[in-house]
Image 1: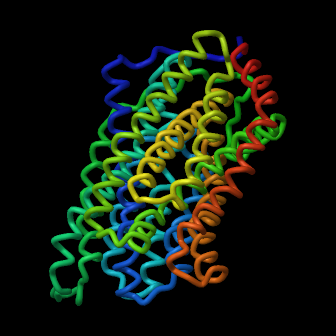
Image 2 (image 1 turned 135 degrees about the vertical axis):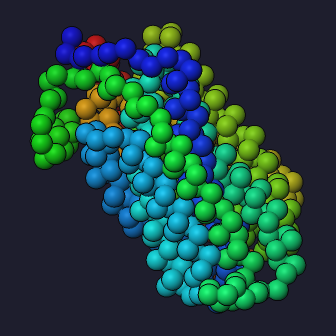
Length: 442
């Protein structure tokens, strides 16, 4: 045996850590996704095109969210993870509030960049903490609970945004002393952004667990050595890591294509923001967590049956289902059918998000786990955020030249990139199984 492990925290303490980290993930997605509900009011207020909206939804957030992900992972492998997360929460909460003070495209773009800076710190450090709270055979469920924050946060963004905007939009823009003219969409950013500062204090107060499963063959003392060891480990197993990462890029691209769903219902069927927020929010609130729990349970069940690549198997099936329904829901009639297909898409996408993360940490030893997670998040979010929202905007503006064709744009982008993701996962499944078997036998 080449690994060293100590005592894990008590069950209650471990789940308290998971609860706070999940709450942080929920808040991060509320702050990140609230803009999807505000697209049309922002467009009208700042006179933006669909392409500019795509830039705000994707590249603006992605610039530092992805480039700071690896340094954050490197820090998390060596320094206090709770401090890293607390600082990150403070940054993204303040920058979300500053989105509410933007008066033009450039200012809003810069504020969205700041949100990405803060959120880059969260997941690499959070997954590292969770893995040190639970033994290997019990990790899928807590990681799945954490990953449920994606859907819960998105759901709350729609529900809170819809609830706030209906009464707020009935008001006229008003002047705030010392700030200037504030529109209802700007007030929404201020309301959802600032409470995150309280969560940062709670995260900073937890007792950090001892690091587990320390692989003695991967010891390194300097930051450069740690980075080189991690990169060499992943390079030697590039087929397993690349297939999983490319496959999960499809998950991220389609997830951000779905940011246009509010606009789809507004333009195609004339729905109001409040109605859309409630409908989509409830679907995400139910199907998102349900998908992550189902994915985690299926992965745990297959793992107990002796399948060391259990998480990868569930991920492949989930991605296939996600792609099918993501292509169908933007183009069907009537809207009730679109909502039903959207619900199944959310269920399968959430399962894939959870088990994809489990597959990654399962194949990665402790010393490189946060860095591996950071690189994985960098690549899939860089590709997903850069290609998903902007591709839809460009197709709608430049190819169709018709704002009403946003549904066709969504379906095309999902079909193309989803097909690439499925192919990568299928081709890499065998290599992943070989690698994860070696890791579990160490």
